Structure formats: C-alpha cells, structure tokens
Image 1 (spheres, rainbow, N blue to C red):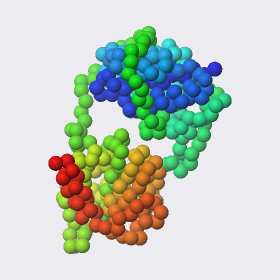
Image 2: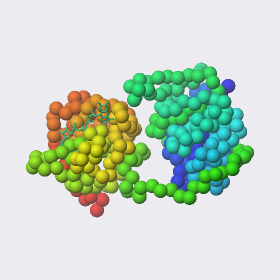
Image 3: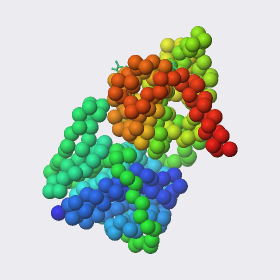
Length: 342
Ligand SMILES: Cc1cc2nc3c(=O)[nH]c(=O)nc-3n(C[C@H](O)[C@H](O)[C@H](O)COP(=O)(O)OP(=O)(O)OC[C@H]3O[C@@H](n4cnc5c(N)ncnc54)[C@H](O)[C@@H]3O)c2cc1C
C-alpha cells in the first residue's frame, strides 16, 4: 500500500500555509481517498500551531519541522526539513507544491532518498496505479505518467486544485527529528519590489494582457506610451489583476521604440513566455497570434479589446471581442472603478 505525504510550507507571515500548499493538501486528500491510503501532511514553518489548526479537519497525521531556521527559504535547512519529514512519514508518494521554495530543493531531497521526481504535475488520477498528468512542448502535448520507482516525488503546478479550507480546530502535531547541517547561508532580508509595483500576481482572478498596440501610433498619428502606462497601472491598482504582455511589447525596448517601463520579459505570455492560470483574461491592444494565445491555454473566460475586427482573437480565440479603442475603453473602465470605490 502507498503512504502519501503532502509537504507544505508557510507563507511570508510565517504561520499561515501558502495557497499552493493548501492546493496540494486537496490533491493529497483526493488521492488518499481514491487509493484508500494513509495520508500525512508535513509542515515546514517557524511555529506549526496555526497551520495545524487549519489542517485539523483533514484527519491526516500532522508532522512538523519547526523553528527559527525555517522562517526563511534556504537550501540547506529546507532540504534537511523535507528529508526529515519524508523519512519520518516513510512516504512512498510525496506531493509538494511547485513553489520556488520546494522546486529548489526537490531534486536534492529526491536524490538523498533514492527516489524519482516529476515536476509540473497538473492532475492525479488512477485507482490502482497513480497516474500523474503533465504537459510537454509548451502545453501542446498532455502526457499521463505512472512509475514503479519509490519514493515518487510529484511537484504540483499552482492553480490546478482548489485550496483546502476546513474548520479550524485543535490538532496534535508530531515533531519530526531533524539534524540540521552547518548553515553557511544567513538570510539577512528580502529585497522585493514594493507592494503595488509587483505586477505578476499568479493568484489574481484576472489576467490583464497588454500588447504592442499600446505603444503604436494612434489615430492622431502619435504614440501615447505615458498615457498607456497610466491607464494600465491604474487598472492594475484598482483591480489587483496580474499583468501579462505580448512578446512584441516586451521586445520593443531593444529596438529603441517607446516602452512601458514596468514590463519585463517575466510578464510575457505565450509559447516562449508563461502559461498562467487565471479564471479570466482581458487582452488589450494585442493581435492574438497563435504563439501568444498558446500561453492562454489555461485561462478560463477570455475577452479582448482590439481596433481590428479581423484580429486573431475574433477568430475563435476569445469568448468576447470588443472592437474598440482600448485607450477609450480602459479610460472609462478606470473611471467607473474609481467611482465605485469612492
Ligand atoms: C517562435 C516564436 C515564438 C513566439 N513566442 C511568443 C510568445 O511567447 N508570446 C507572444 O506574445 N508572442 C510570441 N511570438 C510573437 C507573436 O507571433 C506575435 O508577433 C506577437 O504576439 C504580437 O504581439 P502584439 O499582438 O502585441 O503586437 P501586434 O501584432 O503589433 O498587434 C498590436 C495590436 O494592437 C491593436 N491596437 C493598436 N492600437 C489599438 C487601440 N488603441 N485599441 C485596441 N487595439 C489596438 C492592433 O489592431 C493590433 O492588432 C512568437 C513568435 C515566434 C515566431
């Protein structure tokens, strides 16, 4: 029989589990129920009390590795913690969220335990054998994997399962024995864009995509990049949407054309960019060519604003296309958002 372990870690508050961790808990509960296998949830955090309370209704065995050393992401302490939890749980199947923290240590921990690792898992199926699904070739081919090797580590993509949310309650947590190696890395702090400047928000409900049209000459014969920037940032601030971009727009900097300074290649969506998962997407001033739209594969409801009624979106790639000037539309949308907030 399989023994399933779900690895989780706390968010930047240090006590609550990350959303991706809670999504993996859901995947673990579903898999354990299907295989009638025991489930252990491993928690890596400073203090596991709050996380354990949030997980009490899962009925799973709760194991923790906690203490100041686990407040921050660091290879040596995170790898030691994950290894200790795997050994204590005697896990044959290890599910972990594909967060930067776990992605960094997963291969090393798998190697230490003599196991096998698969990443970017989007679904788990099967009743007899475990079937793990992932996409290859930029989300063009979907494959279903099964393996005999154990322990089998599976890193789950964020957004593929609902986040676990159950009644809070008292729950016993066992501490896993851990021998920390000498820690050579001291985390002195985190340098990150100020709140409000960070435009990539994987947990946002809406993806707002800006295309090259925002910096192209408009009907008055002039380009209006400053106004474009104001409209886009105004919308993002008002809605908390995540900002995506077409390749043409983020490539423009190198061509000496007008640029939107808050965009980088990290925002690029598409074949050579990201494939984010959001419930809704709004594309603006973007043509909707296939190499871009392939990155929208997992976006639920799609809408586009384009002056061109014959743009790519209008050819079956969007649910709704507004044939309109995005400067005018977004100006009015922002005004309505402002009025609604006031
Ligand atoms: C191998 C390969 C990989 C690629 N990978 C990617 C990728 O990962 N991501 C990606 O995005 N692209 C990718 N591309 C490029 C892709 O084919 C397109 O060139 C790119 O997506 C076009 O960007 P765009 O739609 O923003 O710009 P454009 O094609 O210039 O379109 C601009 C659009 O803005 C509209 N517009 C202008 N003004 C307004 C206005 N006021 N209101 C409303 N609409 C307006 C215009 O009608 C036009 O449709 C790749 C190409 C190749 C060959």
